[in-house]
Amino acid sequence: MRTPSLDIQYKTPDQLIKMREAGLVVAAALARLREAVAPGLSTADLDGVAEAVIREAGGLPSFKGYHGYPATICASVNEQIVHAIPSARQVLREGDVISLDCGAIVDGWHGDAAITVGVGEIDPRLSRMITVAEDAMWAGIAAGARSLLTGRGRLTDISYAVEGAIRAGGRYGIVRGYGGHGIGTEMHQDPHVLNYGKPGRGPRLVPGLALAIEPMLTLGSPDTVELADGWTVITRDRSVAVHVEHTVTFFDDGVWVTTAEDGGRRRLGDLVTAKTGVRSS
Ligand code: MF3
Ligand code: CO
Image (cartoon, rainbow, N blue to C red):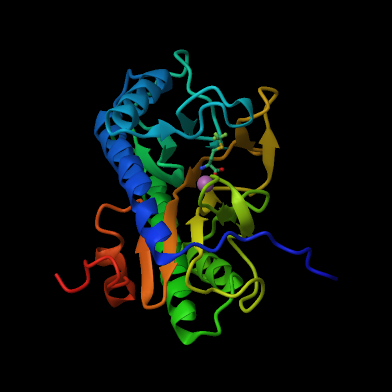
């Protein structure tokens, strides 16, 4: 089978560094949302918080108006996996888990990231699934960085590492119909980044890439259903899902996670580029 040709936007180091500004705005919005999440709050309330943070920081909410999407964040609760539209009628309750997905544009460049958090006290099985999703995302990012540094790496080295970390973490469903993506002057660019599969396939991992890496896990079957609103994606078996995401930029000496406050330093160590001036500190 022939691979259809991909339209990948390769960035200069200066452009990748520029993407950090949008990434930090997204990081700030998600940090504020993480603190705000509490029983009794609606997902529309959270949307307002995120929009205020983004605009005060001088950014634009990238989701708003994207193919008609009406809000600043996606707020996906429990069996909702991704792309759930915030609503005043969706009120958080103790024990819920919520994926908060947020994107911003600064000077034309995008950042895109998501966290999953518990509302009050949650079932330990759910906290465990959140940890596995985070570990899998960072395993994918680290694998991408290591592959990049060999000079022979390919995109699905990331996919393979994400899947491996999820399987090592327990018996979870791995959502197949949605995944990560290239990002730059548009939120969604080529290539699509699968969260499973064999390594060594797809485009080469080279400096200039910017990728959003976003695993989605379920407690049950990975099968999905899109609701009649045209956006919300839920698990077919209504099992709880989690979703986390970071935007990662690729330099010749490592990677920089634009949407992580520390650029990924704590999780990645020396796999982080020195080009941003952070490694030596
Ligand atoms: N981070 C989400 C993704 O990559 C973007 C949500 S799509 C929007 O799929 F329409 F809600 F903006
Ligand atoms: Co994304």
